[in-house]
Every structure is written in C-alpha cells, then in structure tokens.
Image (cartoon, rainbow, N blue to C red; front, side, top):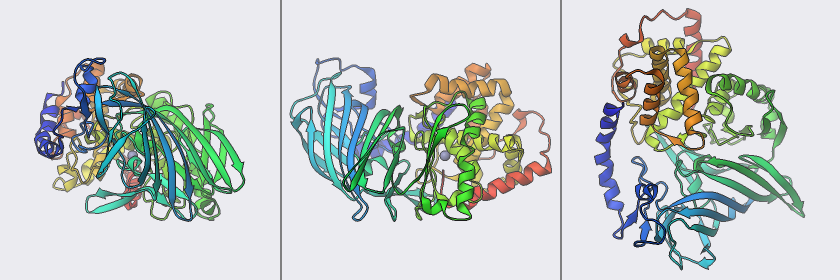
Length: 523
Ligand SMILES: [Zn+2]
C-alpha cells in the first residue's frame, strides 16, 4: 500500500487546483479522466471542448484532453542562415470524447494553415495553447487527422534550476541546430499533445542545405540530395513521449555499426569536437563503450527496450546538459574529457526508466533520475570504482543532517527545482535503501518487472511502490515515506547492520560527486 505517500502528495493538489480552476473553460471539458473512462461512447451524448491540459498537477496546461495521438509525421526544412524552421506536421489521433473543439500545444512559431479531416479549421492562440475548432465535430473513437503548416524561428525555453536556469529547446548552432529540453521543448517546434503520457510514433523528413546532415530518433530510412539541398528521412516506430523527439542539424561525423549484442548503432559527433585533441579522443572512447554499457544495464534491468541506439554530441556552447532523447541521447560537449562514461550510462539507463516506461506525471521525476543515477553507480561498480552502497554511505554520512539536501522532498519536488540534486542522489539512495530492505533478488526483479509490465507506457510512484510490495511481499510504506515524502534525513535502522565502506570506494564516490556537482546542467 501507499496510503501515506498518496495522502502527502494530495497536500499539493489543493494548491494546484486553484491554478487549474482559473484556466477552466466555461463549456464542458473533456478531461484526461473522461477520456480514459470511455464514458462518452461512440456518437451518443453531447459534444464537448477538449481540456487544455492532460491533468498534470505540476504543469496544468501540458498536453490536452479528448484525444490520443498515434503518429506525428513532420516534414520541414531548416535554414541555418536565418534559423527559420518551416514544417508541415501531420498528426493522426483518435478522439476519446465527442469534440466540437480541442487544443494542441504550440508555442511561438507562426501558423500558415490548419486542416482537420480534410477541411480548413478555425483556430485561436492563447499563450502556448492552440485552440482548434474543426469544421465538422469529431465523434469519440474516430480518427482525427490534423495537418498544420507553420514557420518561424523556433522558441527556446529556460528551465529553472533552483536559483539558476538552463537554456533548452530548439537551439541554433554555428552550422545548424540542436533540439533538446525537458519538460519544454516539443511545443517550440511542432504542434503537439505535449505530455509524456501521450506516446506516439514519429517520422521526420528534414531538408537542409547540401553538405549538412540531420540526426533524429530511430532509423535513417532515406537520404536524397537534389540540387543544393538534402532530405533526410528518419523513422521512429516505437512509442515515444513528445519531449524525447529530436532533430539535430549540422555537419556530422557519423559512425554506424552494431553493438556486440547486435543492436544497430548510429552515432553523430560534430567534426569540430572530433578534431579537438583533448575532447575528440575522450568522446570517441566513451561512445565506443555504449555496447558494454548496454550489456551491463541489460544484466540489471532486462533486455534493452528499443531496436536501435546511438549518441548525438554537438558543438553547442549553450547546451549544458544531456537528454535521454529516445534511442539517441543528446550530450553536452562539457561532459568530456572527464566523466563522460558515467553520463552515457545515465542516459542509456533512461531508455528503460523514463523512455520505455515514461512519467505519467512530472511530479514523479525521481523515478527517472533516481534510476538513472543508480545506473551510474552500477556502472561504477562494474568499473571497479565504488559500489552503490559506497555511494549511499558517502552521501548519508557526508551531508550534514541540517543540509537543505534532506529537506528537499524528492517525491514532491519544488515546482521551480524539478531537477534539483536530491531528485538524483536521494532518488538513487532511496533505491539502495529498497535494495537493502528487500534483498538483491527481489530488488532486481522489481527493476525488471517494472519495465516488462509498463514498457511502452507510463508508471507512477504509487504504482512503483505497489509493485515493490507485491514482489517483496513486504509492507514498504515506512521506507518510501521516509525516503520520498519526508523532508528530513531518514533513519537507517530498517536497513540492518551497515558496514563501513572501504576508503577507496568513498574516495571514488567523491570523484564522481565532484564531476556531478561541477556540471553546469543536468542530465
Ligand atoms: Zn537523467
């Protein structure tokens, strides 16, 4: 059970409800709950406006209600001289309510035309909400085909990180663009149901000046040069959350092959970085180990969930983070020359935790970052540096009991610090505490079963706790309440006897910690 966890999470609901109420439209609204229930049936009952948000407490306007996107087909061209991105996005969705109106998320660029099911549609823009009124109402269960043509310089976003912030989104480079951000990125460059819980497959058809390349998620399906331009077709068939979609444009040093276990690999590194005598060899060495990383993580978490893998490393001076863009993470160059292997382990771990099993609500971000941090510790153990227990001991004993680290509630992080350090480190410690309580066998069964049962979909903290209790046969409220929902340092009495970590292990953890904290951004 997870009663206390839910009760505590409920405390914020009333605060956010006040915000949500202000946004509620006067007409009946199809919420995410309505659409899940199927109460609207097929063609019976009234027609409603789709909700402007999917129901996320932290981001009330993220995503929309009343439909479920199946596929995005994005055909566009990018001009590096002007940074203008012009595209037609064809969205295939299924209505989950009888709709006379629905919303998309789209922030910034100009809309040239909008067609729904073959007819021109009316639309108005309200901030990042695109409110669409189709010529003909849409019946629940029917297919909605939206074709939106837009152009402009895509919007960038600033992600707050405590008292700092991070540039994210569609960011121009000296020879193209890098596209990465979390949670905001997708709505800056295509109309979208912008919440991780509405997964879809994607096709990208991107035309760029001849001599430049495009790297995206999934498989390169085609590449054709006509005159002065080249078109790249990328196919990402596996269900993907919107923030994980990326197209990266510029000059690329491309390496293709297979991992030792047979997974096709496609890496793209900016040639300026490859040419750097310090960064080039360091980046190459980390990327060369991706197959080994996947083998180590597969032993712990189960089979790698996707059919292709790889990395994108661009020379973008303002990119201070890495992101788990599905099948092909985007990395800041600043992770090299020191510590890059660990970040590769982190982003590849997200392919299981974050990508294949996505967040149903942003509040549960520790499920992504705690697991990815834990994977770094598993990799460190594989490398002979330190064990996850060494990491636990280092932080438990080393961070003063009155430090803000312990008052940060990772299961309910501050809205303006969703990616604060404790989400990562205390999140990883929570998993080590779980491992100590239930034992190695149950712990790794939980890890694998989570992905087996929820791969392709989403999961919540409450569902994770329920699974941990089912697998272990133990009541774990006290453990999860202490580690996720309490703003103080948990006691470790329930962990049994702790043996002092070896000095070499602790020293290695501190090296890792120094790399972690010196990183300007997040990953
Ligand atoms: Zn991460």
